[in-house]
Length: 100
Image (cartoon, rainbow, N blue to C red; front, side, top):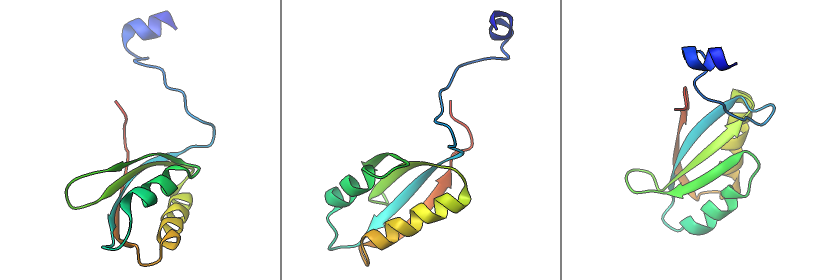
């Protein structure tokens, strides 16, 4: 292990929960009559949601999520839309390709 670290083959160690395959950033534009704080608090308590940030710019919230695969990601998006019917104006999802 020491030689692999010294040669740069091993650059860092990461602990990942078993079964987690994708990390995604879900940007949400919230409807006008939706309480952003309450929505963020609800989402942040869900399994697979690491954290939720209220942000400036085109979106109101960004959720960092960890899911098994694209099917589970679609399920997470569907759950978000169904949690507040009419409360979400749009979503934009970005997959994390690499973490530094």
